Length: 495
Ligand SMILES: NC(=O)C1=CN([C@@H]2O[C@H](COP(=O)(O)OP(=O)(O)OC[C@H]3O[C@@H](n4cnc5c(N)ncnc54)[C@H](OP(=O)(O)O)[C@@H]3O)[C@@H](O)[C@H]2O)[C@@H](O)CC1
Ligand SMILES: [K+]
Image (cartoon, rainbow, N blue to C red):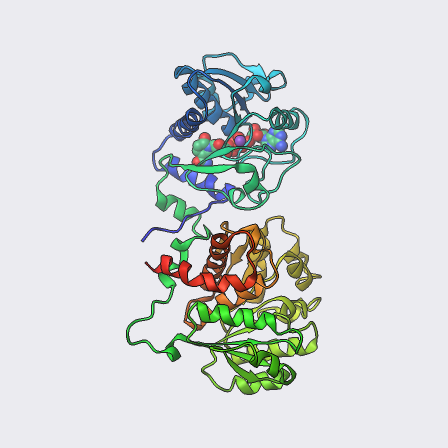
């Protein structure tokens, strides 16, 4: 089994770096390996003898740049190196790396990027401490304006390693070489868009050290949850594969529930039932075949249905309406302690009432699936949950506050668990931004939970499978297509 990909924050990486040094690997050795990895990547991007311009910063990122510059010059490239600030200010390993550089050092403001065949951006890495200004910002802007290929060392300068935000200005790289593990900025937007293709170079920090310092943040990929996917055996029965219940909206708002229901069935929920308001029974009945139908009149109706313990997973929200009745249905579901997915109207109905959700979901597996706007509405008046700059931190705090897994949607969907685990998804496609796509996602997650997949893994798997299905279809995708593509995705995952 392949191990899940660890993502380390800049401060975790610094600690891992220190642990590696304490374990007997000298820091300069790590820097040499980092610089060598950069040089090797540069060689793939520039033809022999090409003009390479290295922009080095005042810290260790600059040190990596000096090492790469030395190696590239030895290998016959025409290397020019510019430094931000005086060389005398370089410290520690970076100072040692600079001593190995036999060429001249140009002040950064005199560096001519337009003459380069390739630019190596070694200005700032994980140590960026504030917004770029002055010469640093000018250098970044001139690099971008040159329209020459840029290779970023560790991360594009000006991108915040923790949040992926642009701090004043940031390099737009074609390729990024990072070390030991990706950082959040390589997956979170807009950082991800600034990185180009990202390569992770092994610089000899052992995985146990990385696991000890990181270990709670992951790239969302099958290695994280494939082992949890249900594999029905010869003797398994549909009743063992769970029964998902999806609440439908009124007569003119029934499609969302059916999309969720079909997705739950496709992902393997043994049985799926749509719970329909009496006035919508006719329209739902006209469109359902394998999916069953039950009349359900508001919260009391739901309470009655849930007396049957076989309904073990529930979707509430899609097209239910924003009102007290929807809130009451959520309360019924929470008291019934079933696996629960809450989306859309079920979340917005709690606008300004976040305190009602404090610890509300700690007794049964629950997944909340807000997009950014729904998240802001839901936690209005809770600056502790809304203010952190990092999307991961906002979602983590919301998970800890509510006791639910929080799936904060976007081009960089983040999934967090109340225990602190977090995953960042990166296989999303713009084609998924289509009506009903979120309803389908709810159904996939609930369908997995109905089969016993834990909430965090169900949410991570649901997002990934949803996006993979969208990617396979491509242009022209509508939500109805998504569930139909799930079997092909599942077949490949279970192979
Ligand atoms: N971890 C590992 O395993 C390994 C890490 N390695 C490498 O180390 C890098 C991290 O090094 P780092 O900590 O020295 O930080 P780095 O990004 O060079 O910047 C710090 C410097 O910039 C300055 N500065 C900050 N913000 C500024 C601003 N806005 N405008 C102007 N100046 C600003 C800051 O100065 P100060 O804030 O003190 O004024 C300081 O001088 C990492 O990305 C990787 O490349 C490898 O060598 C191999 C092993
Ligand atoms: K950089």
